[in-house]
Image (cartoon, rainbow, N blue to C red; front, side, top):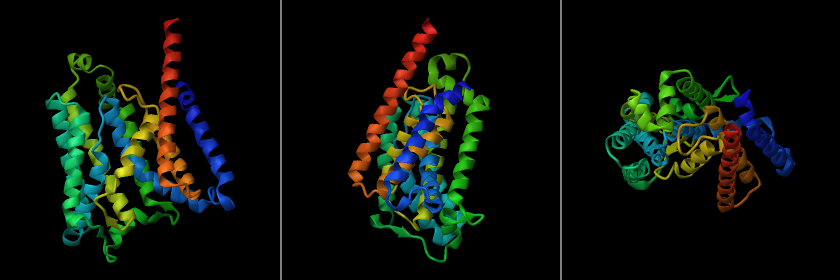
Length: 318
């Protein structure tokens, strides 16, 4: 019940946004079944990305490279697709992502460099490598690659987008990992107090490597889904996805200092961002104003979260 009460303001925010856009978008187009399915498909890539970021932020880190990894995984997948087929393309794209994640994790665990600097450098390297494929031009997926195209556009049962099924599976696995395993307990311990967790026997360095690898893997999966949905890889894909996924995690109540958060909050935060962006697009709001609105929402979410922590802290001290 305590956790449910924690999410009530976020659920209320979703309800308010749905009502606003249902009334504001012309011709009642926002809450139509078709648009809601499109909304679910749109949220999937950003939510999968946010699930991996949640793990990194819970240990007090940050991963700025995931947007560039989305692009790199996509262009690598398409480049290998014609030679090795869909499975080979998937393996190559995910392999490139995992390599980036392992690099981030090793540097974070074995050096004193902050994750911000490490992942910023990896972001630049991954983006440069993505730009190097096909001389920065988009890489289209051939019309004969039906299996690859279906990965991003197929509908299970004729109505449920396949990326949504993948998203649900990723979130379910992440939820079990975080809240039902010793790995999750160790992760929260590292975020709460890394030195104390190490003294207690938690293998912090090994887990840090694994967490950054998982973050990059979800980014690679998101990149392949994004590539399949839009029928091609692009070196500039992933730029807005990074900021939207970080915003989703913060709005969902995950502490940027680590040690506190819940994957359910990330799901709700991803939904809020998707509703907000989709509604603004349907209202034909200029893109720069969309960024402004999302930024304001993030600031408000952080202020509300800080106020809630202050109230809880005072209550516990009394």
